Length: 119
Image (cartoon, rainbow, N blue to C red; front, side, top):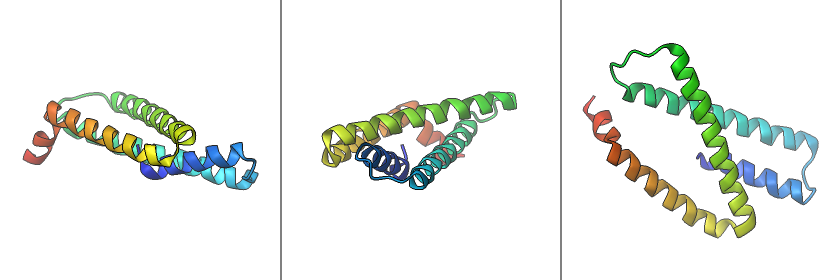
């Protein structure tokens, strides 16, 4: 999850619950979150397409990958922001570090890093 999307979601949650956000600010934050998630989704979809190598798949398949990845990223961002809202930002850093290490372990186990660097 992008730290910036996570931060925007956290700020939106905290300021909305405290009644401190105007409708314009709320719209700007929501737009920023959606744009960030879409950008991440495109990046992940293209990375997965590159990792597929010579596999021929219809364009619709990668559009589906994009949609699924955006939904996954939105879900993760929301869960992490709720975690921070309930438990405080200090514990969020620990959660993000553990999440990042697990993600790197999964990528390494899959062999994606070796495949990517050998191209």
